[in-house]
Image: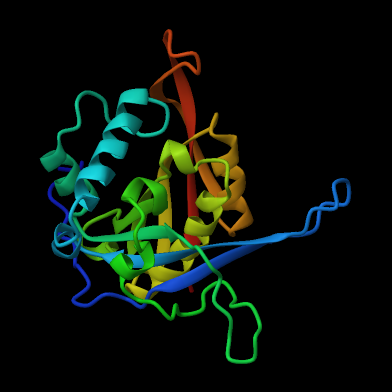
Length: 243
């Protein structure tokens, strides 16, 4: 329940196409090591779709519960039960990134580009024989930030499992968000609470064309980095138009 009451969310009636998001690491001039292709495929899911994939919902819920327990990024606190997670995170549309194993090529042999439609659309096929922990690069929801006459402005929440951090997957997921949100019918995006101490996130959104439209003093009572105490932290409100 938001400050506006229950926000009606329109869920996509069919999944948007799976896409590929890539980054290329050039050859290291110091070591001589060759560059590597890194990519994820991003899959559009609803709660019903995710429920049909054994173990996926449980894994996503466990990772999110730990994120809430850590108290550094999301405003919720306390125990996050699985049903609560599903009701909150899967209220509308969810996108899950799967770590790629072998970057596909075009018919002419060129590397695929970010945003290209993936040859493999099925998330279970992209997973292969790996566990969800091994292959889920991260995931995020997209839903309206406001009700009714302002429901064309969306919001999103991102999670990258600890085992997949510092690999650039957050950047790839964010790029895919800017791709998918307008295709769900949204005209703009707002993030209500980007805590100022999350410098990497602030820089990432600015790089993708988001603008700081306000700063909320003492917006979050977050745990300190050492986990030994709490502190009040300001937050940015950031916005991007899709048209």
